[in-house]
Picture 1 (cartoon, rainbow, N blue to C red):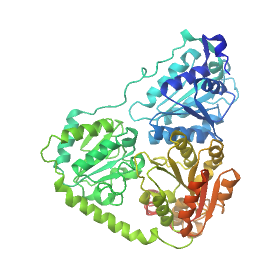
Picture 2 (picture 1 turned 60 degrees about the horizontal axis):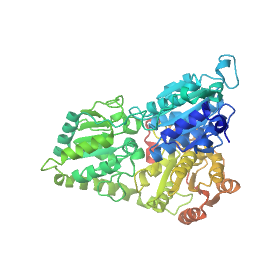
Picture 3 (picture 1 turned 60 degrees about the vertical axis):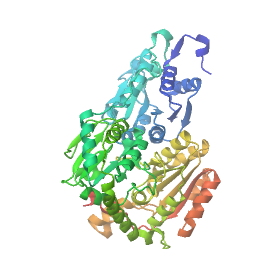
Picture 4 (picture 1 turned 90 degrees about the vertical axis):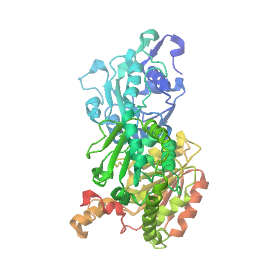
Length: 562
């Protein structure tokens, strides 16, 4: 118990942290303990904030990231000074590229020992500033809650992202009178982050859209961040526009929806007269914008001014919240007697034919009975296994590239992947956060064997906190995406240097830690094994042995291997 009850009028820095987290709506912190930060735990106990302690700080940061994506509220990780903070850097960097709002609080040596070489003293702020939206030191206990709220405000400024605060040990442990501490009131210290967009630009976009004969729209991660999925679905259905989805935007339209397209994007971007890119940058996933037809009118909508027009010129750029902008376009389009929807029927049929042709070319691989198991068979079985309540997580290289062509989440917000940093090791922490935040959902995670190895020990944390999920490892005993590139560049005799892994029976690892595990060598056993994992009610690993000599088309087309 805290001794705050006895004094009543003063609070320690750790308790002020907890009060500020509570004001933001944070109900859990992910952490690995350290002497610099334990007063925060004491504060969390008083404020009713759960503490999930993990086995590596990278996992804590990734879990905070995953929590933010699932809930729409910022996540929080608390790590100790020095190596505790540097261990969390990868998670911060991943959230930065993925535009995920979270706060990482790091410990620091006492201010009274500044520059004296205290235990685990490092220049955390200097290191983290380039990969965060805000990074600062809390200079006095009176400012603790104030600076936590400041960090949250900056995390939601424009496109969201991570913020970092280091709190020196003496600042965290000191007590200050309640009346001298600034404690911002919940709901009063930051504004709505929804930007409406330029009305004139929205009017122009509406006119372009209703007059277009062959439009296409890409719904990116910000569509889910802004919770614009319902509006986006209404827009494409009412105007009869084919929609492609990437990242967290997947699931905006369910499989089978007549406006849901997945395999014809290259054709669409080559043949469209209007291309609307919503909430995704022109980065490597988009060929830096070069894959878009130069004859098309290109419109980009983004929450960040710096993203619009980066790497490729656009005909129209709109800075704004996707929900607000798309709602305005939909409303404006309702004023047109003819929106052009009927005239686009042939365009959608053309794209469906491209989709069917591509799917038919691969159909035999989806049902292949060969051994080792073809990756397409594995991801096809996973896709068939998913229900309306299944949240899918991809953590790996080549095997997750396969899954991106086949696995289709059935609802918005039911797809999680690392994002553009391509970080391996997010699977277990994302599953942890997703199951904590949404215990009503089934969590299904697909790992490469290399990816699982990075953070797999926190499978034990899932067992300890009773967070069941269905884990699947596509095991080819190799970092196969890199192996492909080495073979392509240097020849088969040098294709396995530094990328070959041992033949690990991960099912035994799962059972050792108190979970459920199975080995699968026969493709006919994938489905039954998945169902047994579901029925076990435990964290599980189904270790599926896949063919190491088969590579995803996306792997073979990566520009780094050209």
